[in-house]
Image (tube, rainbow, N blue to C red; front, side):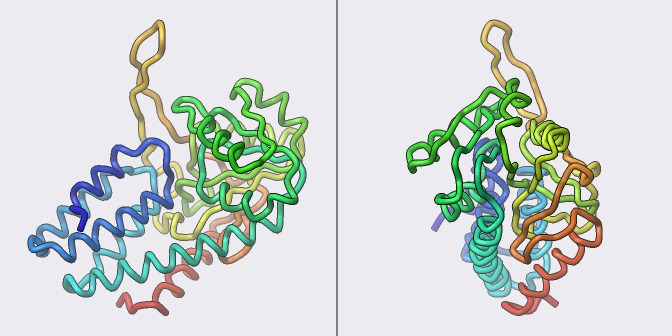
Length: 287
């Protein structure tokens, strides 16, 4: 059995994988804690605190923690987390299938998203070319382009600075989301907001794709902390930079979730979050 502290530390250090993976690992950390001899209320509080600090930009972690706080004892904690993991698996498959129905032709994306990878796999016969931004700082898009290329996609990895040129060749833009604020603004890899801005300029639809457990029920995007990381720049030295940015709802054509296409509005995300909680309650009582 993995140590719960090691799992949370792994999440805190992760620089490529996104909100779905982080949420799943945090849930697995709580399961590991529920199996641990050191389990007690004080240690649970410690685990909650460490989980929230692991990546403050990700509402998915916040929601895992919110559910963990409802645990009455170690058995209840395990039951809650197993139900949540089951929901995550089902939601992931649903949103991939829904989004795959909406895409065709040439599309553009940014960073490395497991959701977008799943969508593209299901829509492979409908896709001509996938333009992937290299996604600096960090360059996660390079890894994503390589993964898609290895799976037989026609992929073009493009410099972030050439976004404007390649947008003119694009039919649709789809991105993942690390968090969605209650104001329907999304937080994702830095560069996403510029991608949305250019899509709007060209009249191209821009769709974030995500599971509804990534919605923050209490905070707008501008209340959610943006994580900074340190990078080494050749010929210059070390710098610190934010690795996420905020894309306002006015640049978003629609939000694709496991509940279907929803409007990028406060009401839309509120209803999606409420459906998530209702469906989770059908798996295990939270009250």
